[in-house]
Length: 169
Image (cartoon, rainbow, N blue to C red; front, side, top):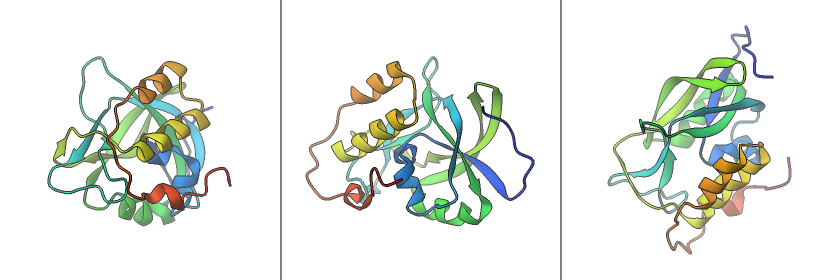
């Protein structure tokens, strides 16, 4: 169940991109624990003039899209991981507090929104990690099918995917 915690040593983080995959998030944020599933609005995009060197393509972001939604995972994390989480998104994203819809009502969560976003196709590797994370965390099947239908670019360069210990956690 998705419940609020009174502990000030923790915060809730809503992940909707590559941090859906537990192994990806735990690489730099060892305190992260699954809390619940939730949803917001989404679209794919990449920062204008700042190429995504980690994934070689567009990255997920949230932006207003009437009638649209994004499913994701609410992770409960120690405040000691806040700086590493901020470093992971670097200059491409800004943090914000969003009310995430969960099975037990809205939950205020830290999430990130891309700065100066422009639509761009994600790399096949990035899409793979997002779809794998969505399946790993039991996101709705219709949403997984939507993710699987996203067009990708033709990236053949190595990405951070090679560094993620998939299946280890």
